[in-house]
Image (cartoon, rainbow, N blue to C red; front, side):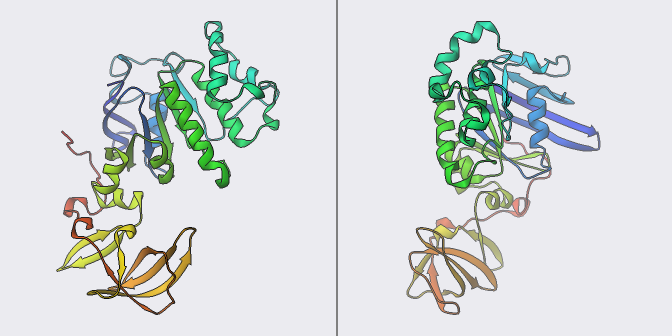
Length: 326
């Protein structure tokens, strides 16, 4: 494993830990998306990784080197970790090349041409930040990080300031840059679609506790608890014989007749299809259709038993304490 996080604990007050026994590994070259709401502890974790905060227990190991444990603390500038912030701050008085190479070790200057090619900036080398689009500024920030040959790249909400109409294009560009460079990356984001688009694995964090860590398909189809399921997509509640089950909207089919009937409350065109809001068994459901339905009309639906998601009593919400994943 290239990055090893072993039972990491971080607290400012011992009775109120911000991170509880965080334990996971990352393979070399993987992109891991770290999803967590505000206050979940994800920013604290990034600060610990970057060497801006010391951990209270456990260890951080990167590329075979201990960065922080009970006996060791490697300073931030010695960790070979690149950090790209959401507002990609560039020096306004420096052009692209000077921004990328600012304070760069002369031994790394030979990488400049390769990095410019990798990030598609060869034709913009003499441009200043105010002459660049948001996506181009983001690529400069990425170039500035990867030219320093980091073992690990940290991206903190890197696409949050981009216009929605270009966000997908820029995400694809950044994904290609990182994958072609082969850099192990941790991406912090609130955007689930962002995670599905570029992450090899997703880590869901809540209240300082790792809720689930797996590949996107597995984590979506087999969520470890109800919180993870809701974070990754909309759920419809169905009670059968007193037991709670959940259905993803895309797994519900509209049919001519069935025992499952509901009343349409709203039909909205959302691009290539209609999003239907309907009342089923006194619960608001969301489903999708190629056709629009009038408010108040009755809908019959069907679904496959294997698409029903069920959680035991320990998983109805989120984990408040770390669980044994071995």
